[in-house]
Length: 162
View 1 (cartoon, rainbow, N blue to C red):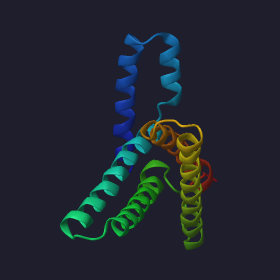
View 2 (view 1 turned 135 degrees about the vertical axis):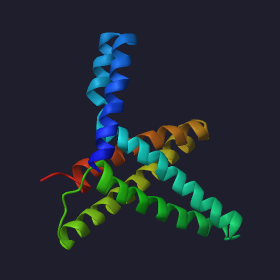
View 3 (view 1 turned 30 degrees about the vertical axis):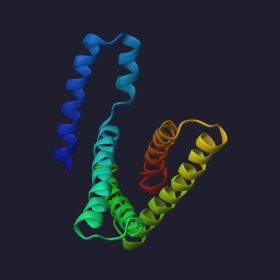
């Protein structure tokens, strides 16, 4: 885990070194403030979570000929579990030791994901059905909001440091 964080920090330092030369100071300062090991790893494992979701869905529907809705539910569960373990161990470095602490984190993580699922459903309905924003734009906007919410929920609720 420390090796992944060390490599990620070196990558960030490299990006910031280049950015300092090409971006205006104000933009560089913003990038420097928000570009952290946690954020980069959250993005990396978020992309991998998406690949797990689509991969499991594709495998179940195409290779095993499982019905699409059932495949989608299984894919979502697999992706959320993948996200939980990678966020817990690699992104936020959970300090939970006891079964009670680990169970508490898991429950909080799942509550957070359930909350953002509701936000996503209501947000899409509002943007697409009420405000009439094109469906792909609505989906993209609400997905960005959900990703940001999931980061903060994981950092400050599910895996908060003592």
